[in-house]
Image (cartoon, rainbow, N blue to C red):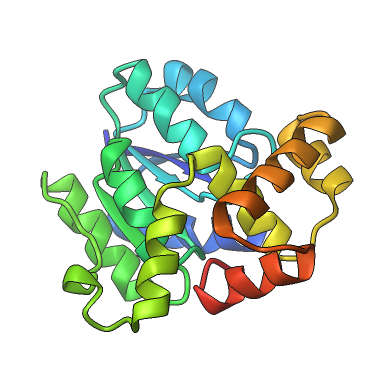
Length: 208
């Protein structure tokens, strides 16, 4: 029996994905709203497909992907996210995802991705070769972002959204001091001198 697990913290999004899955013939559909629920739910229900958001409370999607891979689960993972694929898709591929679809696309893209993944194929966006569509400054900045760890990228994205250190710490279950240390490290790595410049950097490079 075709079964799936939806991992997204927005009930409306989960409801929309459920409709798409039901139309695709999935009979057992389970849901999670936090990243730290996923491993136990996969063990319990053994879904064939996991549709995973990256922006989750608790453990973010990249951390969840790493845990799924580490546990060698048989499920196939489709990432469904608002994040720009230019910075996240390759990381998801390396972590074992079979598809990456952005939420800005029509749901038809999600249907196509589900069909491809369940047939044993991958489904990813075509990204510019050698950054040919980017100017020199953007190319350099993209390379700087690519050097960030998954956790650094997650914190950078949240700082770019204007979240406070305290809010990020609570969301990621980290200490305020740890987030502050990451923020300082990010500013050094990206060559910016203030939180405002950090947000500008994120917006300019479509990280948010």
